[in-house]
Image: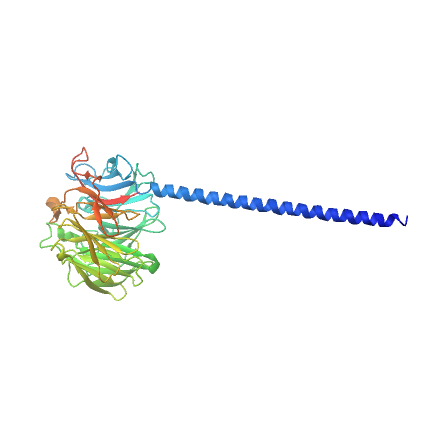
Length: 443
């Protein structure tokens, strides 16, 4: 019995050691399995991320393959319409009209289609009628473009305190700010109308507008600086024959507190030269902007904080009286594009040094071409141009018809070259007769 006790102790000790070893082995196996599982999960995550990246690349590839052109029937008999154009460079039908979406009656014709704006989520295209007020028609039109090549009309709006729809700025949470150049009767002061994500009118800013020629046309916003600017262009009613005398041009840029929708100051040019557009310089720490005097041939650098305007380029060195008009800038703020309407040219600047812009290219579209509206694609590789400004026919004094052609120019760091594959002439593209192309957008 005495000799059996050590033996049992030995056995118990051995069994304990074996048990511990088994537990250790099981733990190792569990850790190994866990590691494998973790690796598998990580690999699964990598696969998911790769799949998402691939989907994002596919989505990127799908973008900018449809071009929208907001246009009007030249005879002002048939409805104004949204032309849907194949903008896919890999397609054999590149540049061809896919379909048109006419405005419904009543109020579908004679609106003088003007500028457009695509909502931040890309689902709504807002379009303006510059002269809708002359026919007592609604003047802001919304289209659903969630199906890019089959848009549908949603609704129309008519802000009660303002008229003469111009430029659109899409808001981050949906909706738009819209510059309305005239008051309800087409004179001054104008307003900036605000629509929410449900396309309902929120307000017309400011509540008490300035009476010193507030006729906003251009608009530019840098939300990160709480900064908005608008440019005053012209008193719209003075463009009509019922008003004696010449055109009452403006020459000022308004600086706003963006979040409060409140005008802080006005920056006045040396003379009322028709400051039709304004663009804040992206990534500029000083919050500066560019505007151009349409009739004094000057490009101005605007110091929004000091309230000053400095001439930095003379367009008469390109073409005297060439009417510099609309502007676009690259996202890094280093390239500026400006249409010169009566000169028939597009100017591309290097704006790396904002105080000393350098001409990189002057693209000549020919005499009487009349380029006005320009739009830069998201990848900044194509600039689209529509050759038509405004023709008020027998009612008014402005007759800048253009040749009704839509161009595409290939953009590089130092050059701007017409794409010979894109040929779209609105004089011949539609069975309803010649049309006037104006606002441009992509999806």
